[in-house]
Figure 1 (cartoon, rainbow, N blue to C red):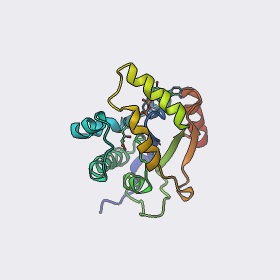
Figure 2 (figure 1 turned 90 degrees about the vertical axis):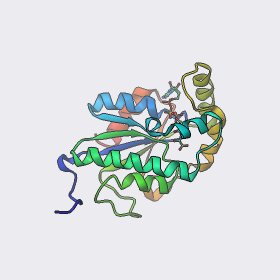
Figure 3 (figure 1 turned 135 degrees about the horizontal axis):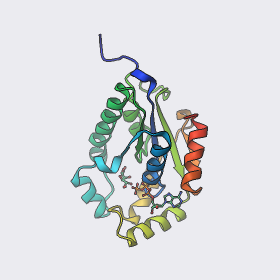
Figure 4 (figure 1 turned 135 degrees about the vertical axis):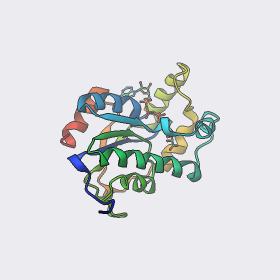
Length: 187
Ligand SMILES: Nc1ncnc2c1ncn2[C@@H]1O[C@H](COP(=O)(O)OP(=O)(O)OP(=O)(O)O)[C@@H](O)[C@H]1O
Ligand SMILES: O=C(O)[C@H](O)[C@@H](O)[C@H](O)[C@H](O)CO
């Protein structure tokens, strides 16, 4: 048999996406508890060189992002192959980046944007809200990502209506965001 079998057990991959400060790390932790499933924070998959670049206020390049996204795709595939639902918090700013992640689904056909198992949820908030959150987080010394990289991320964020991405208001409370995701995706 080949390697294109439908994932056993009907697991799903839910990718919580958006720019820095939108709440990906916060939401995946709470959602994972609600769904009793594993989660991956894409930050944990960055090589030290990527983190150091961001720490210095330099946006990642395509060359920095592609191997990172491919490693994340492989992690999604591993989970799905084992029939497990997995959550991923990842910026996934461009359609072509999301295409790499959709390939975690062994049956995904590139360009169709319809994967029954890899779904995207965009955490949506205005720049002012995000800047305030990032400044606060940086002041607390909690994260390597500086607020001055936010504009480069907003510039890169690309959403095509044909992708059918679920858009959720990221200014709701974390619990409300989680409840909305669960209800909207019938999880
Ligand atoms: N729904 C929310 N309401 C209010 N504050 C929030 C909400 N979600 C997250 N925050 C706060 O905003 C800050 C950024 O959240 P978080 O680190 O989860 O974002 P992120 O998208 O993972 O960011 P990055 O991509 O930079 O890692 C944190 O200080 C967090 O506590
Ligand atoms: O695509 C990117 O530039 C990266 O994923 C960044 O978004 C960071 O990982 C994240 O925002 C910091 O936590």
